[in-house]
Amino acid sequence: MASEESSVLKAADSVPDSSIKLLFVEMGVGYDQHGQDITSAAMRACRDAISSNSIPAFRRGSIPGVSFGEMKLQIKLGIPRPLQHLLDIEKVKSVFPYGTISNVEIMDGGLICSSGVHVEEMGDKNDDCYIVNAAVYVGY
Image 1: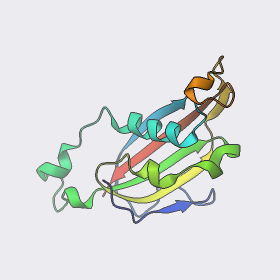
Image 2: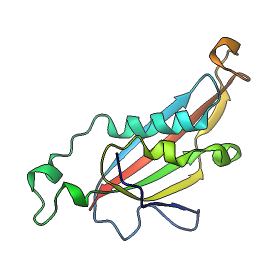
Image 3: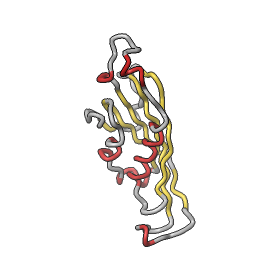
Image 4: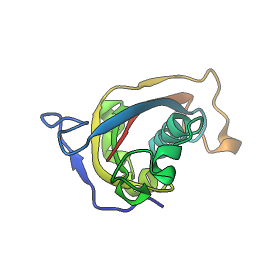
């Protein structure tokens, strides 16, 4: 699991910041169609961002003087403003299997839309679907 020396940034701050030597950016989208759980949508967005990438440079020593232990992650999440206070950031950070998460920025974004159906058996409170956008900045 990624280490936990991170801070949550306000809109005036910005991810990625100058503390990271940026190598690449991974982007993803996550949905919660039933249950209205913004944390689930954010976790899915982060998994989507990292699920189709491999990072051999950190393990193989391709970057002189940089090893796997120096990997830094910074995360930016677009979440609808009325739901931001419901986000469990520690659960979201648990998605990342390695790297040090140095910053997390939550900004206005994402979407609340109708899923078209209210299914009480699936925990629905209404027919809202929550959508979250994620950008994961990887560097050292």
